[in-house]
Length: 417
Image 1 (cartoon, rainbow, N blue to C red):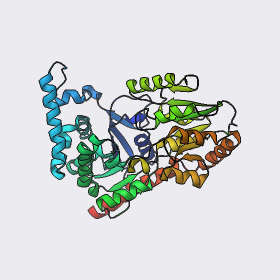
Image 2: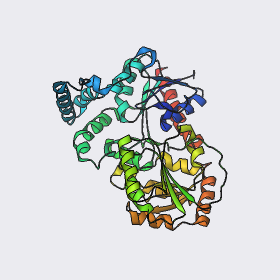
Image 3: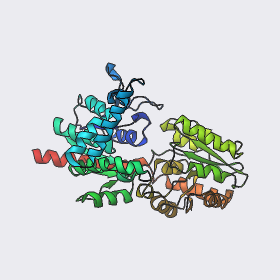
Image 4: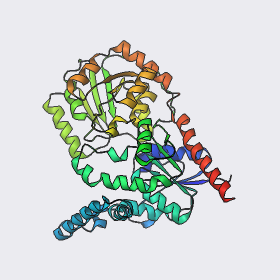
């Protein structure tokens, strides 16, 4: 087979997007031609393969407000006209099918810009990262040839199910988009077994989607014995819905040798709100709000800590099936883990003896789990994490991804011949 070409589509800054970037690296290392098309910016160095960002070649970066018709703050009529139109589009999307598809193209300005840029590219495979890129990938395959794949990092129909407004307005659009296009995808993949099974049930898929876990590239880390202060790390997006408020509140009940670092990008107003919360509880000497580090440095920077932490609430099936990047990055860095007792994470905690879980997102449960640990038990879990890292790595997972698309192309080309 001649050298195949793949276009990776992501509504994200691809250089900083662990999933999309690792996908590109996997195909590049396998000898494919790789182009990524996503949003502009990012703090990480560019990958070896080409990333075509919005804003390149004089094309303006997408601005949803400008495209929606209310770029001038003083234009109140235009503002409310755009809001009413957007609401009508989302309401119409509840009808599903072609109506939802038309609404999608009106509502998603960044996706239109990504489609415009990607339409200048020739590819054998159009790989959609998450549901917002699924219509783009299917349209490109129909118009330009090739096949399209769908990789969903979340259980999209449940992603913000704890928000009433999202459930009423956005979920019908997500479900209609997936229902319309998922069946035509040559490969469907996701990050956990729970999501794969749910997708198969929702859309009566003939095959279970491939499970490609969000593991990092293998990095050799050294064992570092635990000593006071015991450093606990949360890294990831700093945003509501991630148990950060309960985590902060719990620190007052942690033994004094533990401290906490929250590291990652987030909305400045929300970060300020967390900073005030820390101050009001008298915890400024025990909790650090740290800026994000480049994606390629996450594991290396995490290795200075002792305990990897994530308090994800059980508020939806989306959270129940979560198996996030950070879980595997903590493992690769050789940390003990302390996370919510959710099925996908808890199973790996048990299988590899990686740490402890807590049953609910409240300060008492979190504090009890942290206080159950001591340097000896943390060192035991650290050793297990270092042993598991060679199995829970991208070198293993990526083989399944590349083989799935290689097999699909061979099958397609054989039919054509």
